[in-house]
Figure 1 (cartoon, helix red, strand yellow):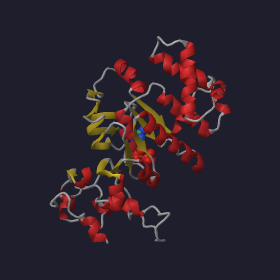
Figure 2 (cartoon, helix red, strand yellow):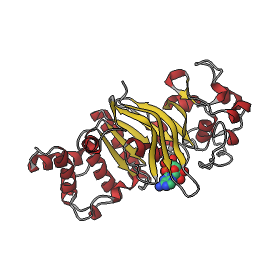
Figure 3 (tube, helix red, strand yellow):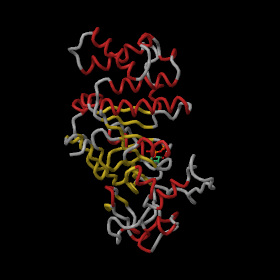
Figure 4 (tube, protein in one colour):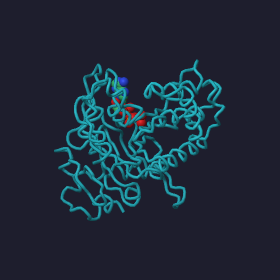
Length: 333
Ligand SMILES: Nc1ncnc2c1ncn2[C@@H]1O[C@H](COP(=O)(O)OP(=O)(O)OP(=O)(O)O)[C@@H](O)[C@H]1O
């Protein structure tokens, strides 16, 4: 059994032009100790997926369907009180803006001990404080920072505090949505390196969302590529690098420069994502796809299993047997 199983997740936003599904039938799973990345252009539904899983959706968003199983337990229908106990202890969330959401008038130590005492009321204040010290050590901050107020810390330090907080109750899964985007590149690298080390030491799994595809390819075990509210492809990071299947994934990968490979002109993906209020018929990527065939505008492609444990939603592969050379990839060479 996977740690997290998301099946046919659907999230709808109400808008003046009519309701639209920002997440439309997304399915994937995350194994214990795995880093699973969600990638795709801005607005494709990555954050909405994360919010749907962690029940952080607020109007005008609403969960319109699907199931989220965590360690076999259904999360979508879990009563709010039970879910509150569950959040932090089994699954925690680190958002891009989280470092700005620390309480400005409370010392860092009190905020960390609050999380521990709220979920483990039997813990003594002294024990909670010493656990808070260990948590700061985990994110490589000195213990005396527990006495600091958030404004006395740099952005990178505040984000480390938030990560320490997310680890406080040793969850099995941490959802990280752009956890380092607001920070400079060097600070980002330090924090990401520490997240990966901690994952190895403590064994938690991560749902990792970032626009930084090269970083994602480096640290994630598997990656799900989303397009216009749907999952286009899921594959092992190394497999995607060697030969992504979906024409959209191929385009996304071509949009990033390689530090080590030969100098090539960066190619974008022509066109722009569809209006989700009235998406195109068939495959949502079809109007931008150089490989589109008649079937692509007739019906939405289903997610089908491919080799190396991956899966792809593309008509070009429906007649292929798993293990065959990717059609679209071979055509473009
Ligand atoms: N509060 C909201 N009200 C209405 N529409 C929203 C709201 N939040 C997000 N959306 C829409 O939902 C879709 C998915 O947005 P979401 O933020 O999940 O995408 P994303 O892939 O995380 O984007 P980014 O990478 O820019 O964070 C987009 O079309 C966005 O405009």
